[in-house]
Image 1 (cartoon, rainbow, N blue to C red):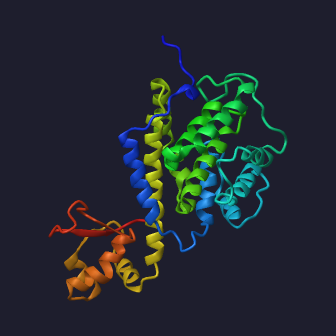
Image 2 (spheres, rainbow, N blue to C red):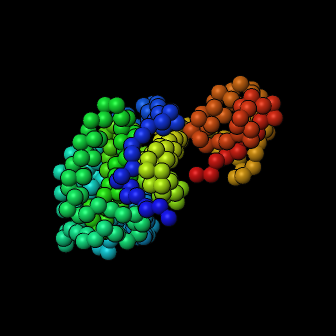
Length: 319
């Protein structure tokens, strides 16, 4: 049986598929209009915190989520309070500055940093470096990341997670750091990632991401994990864009009128909708009702691959 390598020994490579995904995401992020000044969505922030905690085996109740969103301190979940304070700083911190580790430790480990003593950490199945070597290796990775003129920040963000997990600087609490820095690099690159549910998507796709991590370890190449991480970033930025467009069109009276008359789960033809709304003009229906509702993600087509299908039908999208 071949000796299992350590993840930090994997080579960093970039292939055409990775570059293609990075270019697509960069385009989507650039045109994503979440808000004029990219204001912070506290609902998304709290969902991101919930996702991080879920990967630590911790759960936030709906009432705790509401309290966290209002800015109230949770009495029984200090880690959530600490993450909230850290997440509120995202966009203002420099993720490429390793001194952030000190701020993270101060917030997350008020009772002392959980120093690891061995080359094994519970729940992380791969060999890790000796604790004494970690500071130099972190410094080396940061130097590598900062040189990144030839490395796209989207790729570097995925590498931050991969490498921080590979080094395991703490006996517990490493994954929240890796996740935070991954998103912080994305936000540093493009502010539209601030309200994108990156970590929610990461948690939802966690099993496949860990399979990709395993493949990277087996191949001694970060490419499989980076590619999978990019696909998750892409999903999250699409969700953010869809939410922004939905909110943008939410107050359109004609769209509201259309949706209020449609039954959940039922497909309607254009003729059905004309009758439902008391209209006669198909052009007016398409321009004033269907198009804005489709762009906002409030309607879906029965045949999305052929928008001009003469038998096209439309259904409300469940929120």
